Length: 525
Image (cartoon, rainbow, N blue to C red):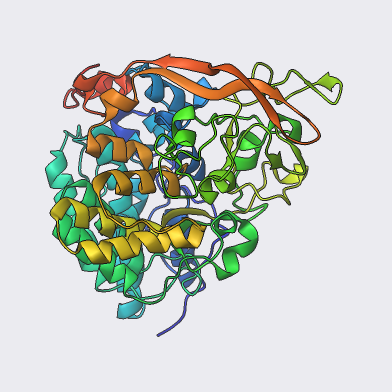
């Protein structure tokens, strides 16, 4: 088999790249590369594959989607996460982070074009099937997001003329398509971890996404089978240090990642630090972590804070699940070599940029994931951390939840859940139940883009997405010791309204409905 050089500098090609506001689900651009001038050489296939991987998921969306939930808040209204979180999103404002990128069919067109054009290339048959399977995964993943956010969406599997007016395909049919694709390609893709595969989609990727969707659909026996198949491959391992799992320095030996977005400085970098670093480090302090998720972390004794008599509300961060300090910068904690405080207007005798009423986090609490201590100012928009989309810990928790909901294999489900807790340094749980699994999932996968989907499938929006969104408790911070003198009350970040009639779906952009008589609006808008 002739080896192809897989290019991850992500050479930009114009296969279907267009604005998400174009008519008819992003009409094919005039400058699209054609079969007459492209698809002739090995280099063309490499470029097309690189183009297919480029943009298959957006790292900023992954780490900021929790701002659409009770975990987080984004003050940058332009990105759109805020409007979904507080219920103000509408057909005119559905934008980049809250669905604009997902609604676009530019990616789907690239995938369909690749799959059609590679058929005519004379290359090793097995290699051709593997490359096609990788792109079929990317297409299935894109449809997964479309179905999660918008429900019924046009299911387009071939390149089509821009004059066609597509109609919405029932979401059940989209789910069936995704599961069928993932099942078929899982038999073709190799069993490799992300290191060996150098970031390419593998059998584990296909089965892990299949397990995710099966869990969301309530297909618990299938979800257990798919997640266990990934676990039993033997090529994935929990990274020994939970906090460092997200650091770019450790990507070369991180066997936990199953599917991730690759970034390379100067060629295909991400600006995540620029938007998520604290203000004093030159960041936008975009994320604001809620009181709700901080209180969700157990005590070190494995109890809810409301159930542990040893919990001291005036020392709220002492003796807690280690993942709290590893994941969240809170008042009085040490972050980037200095005491983090967004509660005090002054720091060291000067105006404090991290003050929550200045340029700091509006909740005075921030997510730390992916922000390693070695970040330099020049890297804020030129960052090379790979962003994990699926990782092994999710598979353990998928199996545990499916076990609880089905009442089957509870002993193994508990063992898997405790592997995740043990890695983090948290005491083992003794009984597997729904409350434990949901809490474990929320804290382990915090700020990784899955909370919105979990709220949707558990139908807990009326409880957790309605009313006041609070941040840190008020107080003052000793800027030398980090000791906090707590006052009364919590920062009110915003008030939110949840609309059950929307069924957790985002609005179809009005611009699409205006030009396509076959597109209908989702309920509640």
